[in-house]
Length: 327
Image 1 (spheres, rainbow, N blue to C red):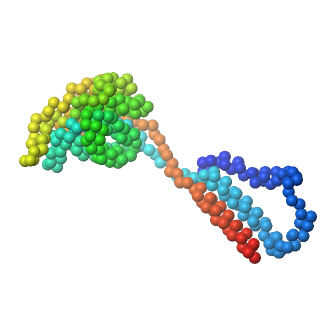
Image 2 (spheres, rainbow, N blue to C red; image 1 turned 135 degrees about the horizontal axis):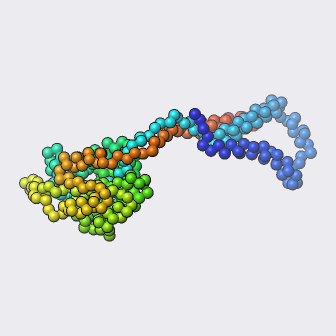
Image 3 (tube, helix red, strand yellow; image 1 turned 120 degrees about the vertical axis):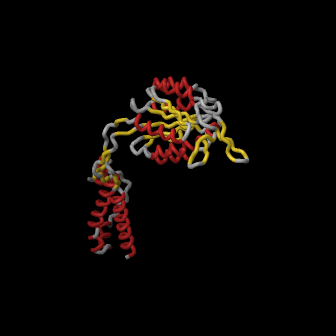
């Protein structure tokens, strides 16, 4: 069906008539030049020229009607389409500090860094979220909102893939990342405030301590699912290749477990890719949120058609007047 978005624009329909009614009063001021021989001017014009006034008036009226119709912004509305009725609102906070350069994961038979493993597995997880709304926070020394809450999962996955270690600083501010997530999630409906935190758990920067931030998250009704990255062997690049060593002291699962406990979430340890994939499978089961059923109707603007017709008709009217003068 066709509807008018701004129907009140049609109230301007009588404006030309009002201008015509007010015109004689303006002429009585005495500023007009009166010609005593004006009656004789009519004889200078051919009969055909004098008879063409009616269609010029009709064209002007039609142009005015078309312009008003364009100003009222006609739109075509399609049939209602139902939106998904179930989904999740997930904010992902991903650590991109220097510690995420540690090579203690394996992809396709090759040792890779923690961040590379997170990017590969999390990107697949994100792109499968067809009915979910996602956001992305990247943090190092500082925490930044990389992507606000959106249904555009492909963009979120792309922004995660493009992230590099050190982009937000080389230290780790877990508390600030949680605090930023609280700021962004507190306006979401209750029961839909979920933060997925991916980090090695060693807080080395920031103004807000992780457990203090967890208390703020708990007060705001935000559940934090903390994923501990690392915990396996550490790879050190040498001239002979990558040498695997035991995990260093930068991995701090204790803090992450406490964050999850305070907020009513869960802690997951992901020391290899298989465990990381299993974590995301668990999240699929943990956080289904029922949404209110909603529908939307596709819209297509139609104002350009009456506006274009008015332009063509005005051009034709102007060209007709020019041709008459040339005659």
